Length: 162
Image 1 (cartoon, rainbow, N blue to C red):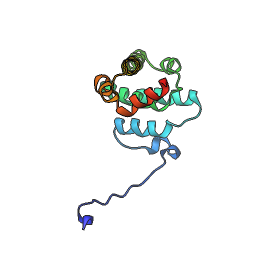
Image 2 (cartoon, helix red, strand yellow):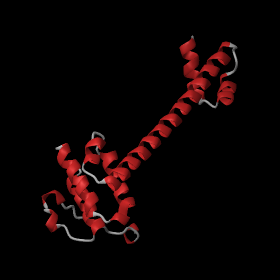
Image 3 (cartoon, rainbow, N blue to C red):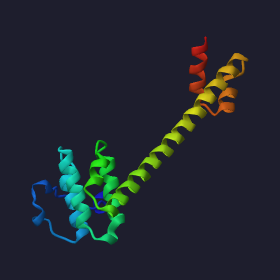
């Protein structure tokens, strides 16, 4: 019955790492993307950096946003890439794009860390408040309501105190 509502998809997996640059066809964005896919797992960091620089030179100047997207993908996928090594192989505009992209990711990471710290701080404060209310012999359900902690957490805290 459900077969008529579920589309049939067929996927073909193709290994571009075996293709030469001359064998990859399409506009510059497609070539850049396929080149990135081809080299993303390059174990030699110097070769990887040279390939990313090559992608920058493959793209036309009005495609800096596309290059930034590829860089974000690369920097998220390969945590150990040397940004300093990369910028040595780029021209001034390429260096600016790479550094602003890295800075953007760094700022997003900092904000993510701050938010995580705020959440952990609120949780710690709620646990501390629950401990004080338990010491005053307040009812577990009321403590859960007052601290917004699950009842199970308040019960666990109570068992740790005893």
